[in-house]
Image 1: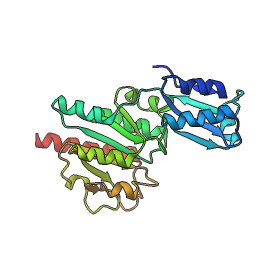
Image 2 (image 1 turned 45 degrees about the vertical axis):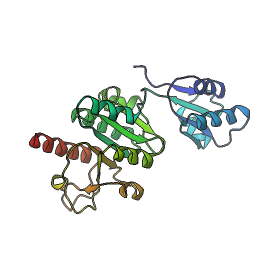
Image 3 (image 1 turned 120 degrees about the vertical axis):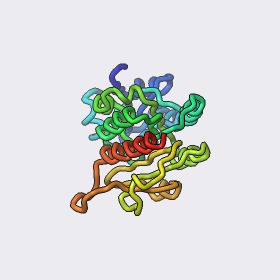
Image 4 (image 1 turned 90 degrees about the vertical axis):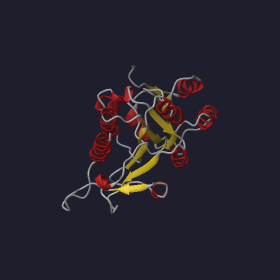
Length: 247
């Protein structure tokens, strides 16, 4: 797998967007203008590619080349369709175990999460295009290559995706420190999707409203929260423990 490429300059980014290559995201300087910039923005919208208007100093920090106020990150992986993953898993005679990530913006956490997910039998990782960490070379390295092996689904609308997942008969369990029930007290009967948010923001209220259950992890009062990758690993272990116990 090739290392993620940084594409700089207006015409190179335009050509990238016009190709079939997966694009992680596009950064556009707020002061950038002109017809090519308009074309780039329109292509991002047409292809549902995440783009962001940023101060030019941000782009300068990422590239010393003549970027003309535009740069893009090509993707290291090919993103999968979550419904196809669910269908394929059921067809194999297995019950899906999914990991849903909201507000996970640190690439190191994403890498650690993917490594644990692969080890504990998760069939796919799902996260939204916006406000999510990039699947870049750092994330892949931290994951020990797991991000190249486990299906990853990047979705436009997380709320709509969660509703679709529920319509497949998959229960949604969220990790939330304010929950009254501990993870080991929850029935984690498969098929199941575990939802995790960052330690700073947690799971949004919109997502919480869709969950079948929320659960917390044992923790001493002297600690405010676990790192999200640690908490998720503990929860996935518990899900696997109950699965083995009930087999």
